[in-house]
Amino acid sequence: MKLQPTHRLRAIAVGAVAVSSALVLTACGSDDNTGGTNAGGGTKAASNIKCDGEGNLLASGSSAQKNAMDIWIKNYQAACEGVGINYKPTGSGAGIQEFLQGKTGFAGSDSALDEQEIEQSKKICKNGQGINLPMVGGPVAVGYNLPGVENLVLDADTIAKIFDSKITRWDDEAIKKLNPDVDLPSTKIQAFHRSDESGTTDNFTEYLHAAAPESWKYEPSKAWAGKGGQSADGSSGVATNVKNNEGAIGYFELSYATGNSIPTVDLDTGAGKPVEATVENASKAIAEGKIVGEGKDMAMELNYATDAEGAYPIVLVTYEIVCDTGNNKESLDLTKSFLSYTASEDGQQSLAEAGYAPIPDEIITKVRSTIDSLA
Image (cartoon, rainbow, N blue to C red; front, side):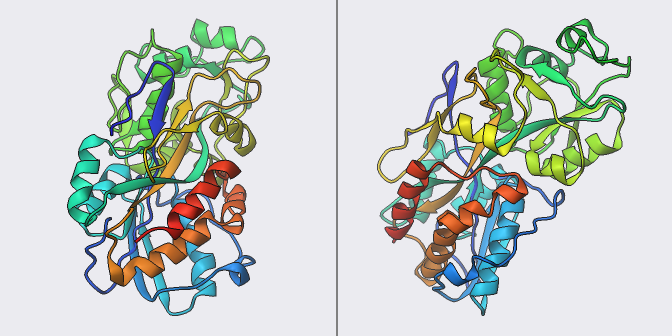
């Protein structure tokens, strides 16, 4: 089943961690983030990790969750000696393709599998299919580089016009109207977007399409469709370019903004006051979502145009994509053990320090039982 976007709501899926071993994987197998924040994350949860399986696990996909994966892998490997987890942040599109080719144990994606991808997965998932397990949530921040401007408010319409090259100077009247007390320079705007297919782009354009339909005429997509601008590879590439170029603006996960000391835009959503990009505010938006997948599939539908107080609407949910049945037997135990930790209370709570939002309790509880049932 392909989840079709509506004017305000869209199903998104997020990314997977695949696991490969020195053995050839034939298992059911998002974005590339190789830089950004220090993953940190101690090993305090190690004593609560149930170790199972052996060998090496290879995963690839969403770069949006790369920093979360760094924390999880560090903690898991500290508790479970003799196993290796290798997550490659190749981007959601590339991660899904490697999964569908049987190269990885599971994939990370910021967009759910579509109808065609589900059909393809049935060739890898013997007697089963690929399913989406929401594991990582968080805000997609809009970061900017404008010396002297510490607080900036934008709305969906203005952001859409900036990224479609219809607003090209920082002292444009539309920006000034939203920031009457800010001394805006006439600096040329340099808008950076992803060059690779990205679930982050998919979710960012879902927001523009839902909240500013008159200014953003393009259909949401992993591939960038706007006019003009400059491209960069991965969230880390966009963040680096914003940090290094005066007048720049770009979109990336909050951890890349905090890790690079990049200021972020507050959103005028129509609520009582502008909403800051924070983990807490993203959680408020994610909590409005619902599971729309069928069977064991847990693809979600989110409201990108919410005007609820304190809800930050540019959010993504990264999925770990696995087979419901038909996973590679040699890596199944390790896959289940590792994903059980990432979905655990300790695993979810370790995300906040890196700028991610834990998945709401009623959803992550279902994820845990689904992981237990993988075969």
